Length: 264
Image 1 (tube, one colour):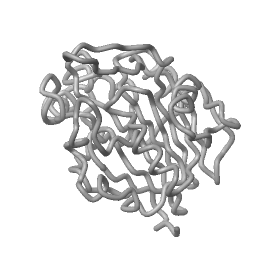
Image 2 (cartoon, one colour):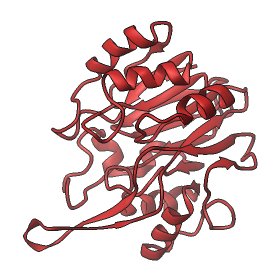
Image 3 (cartoon, rainbow, N blue to C red):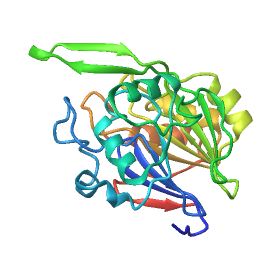
């Protein structure tokens, strides 16, 4: 698929995003589309077209799977996308093992092993590095009577993606504040754009801490994500945008509704 010479970021919904490279390569972040035990009708933020048919993506070359929580990983969706497009999946080792335990998917980076923090060899001219994410990763299963059972699935990661034209995007996943936001991501990788999960509620950075996170990262642009689906989270990016004016007023925000995109 030919690109338009720019990096395009499309909000699919909540934490699911589609990134298209200048040469037309498609990266999909945390595809949660259809139903699970907690959301039987699927991701409420995702347009119906993507729930009905993953072919709506057009193509998927790479999947960036940050961790195993149910609002980021849906095995049914991963199977459907893998069967349609056969993308390479970049995900932590333990998440790769978990997915292989429950599916027949084997197309993970590093000959099926997955990855950890640090840079991978370039994939079709695109460089991807795994970075620290201050969060957890687990399988959560709903039992009879509403009881829950959980098990750890390793650690989550964020990603820094450098596209063919040198434009760098940091994908935060569900991180809280940590020194790596400045020392590793900001000072070393120097991303042009941060896609930051900002829901707060004790799950990710949110409000003031999300604004401060942008100050630590020091990108040119920021796209807020991961809000509005759970009632215990921020429902809009308003608190974040207010904090951004305080902590990082020179960083330009782009608030994307599901289906909307922006080119860089």
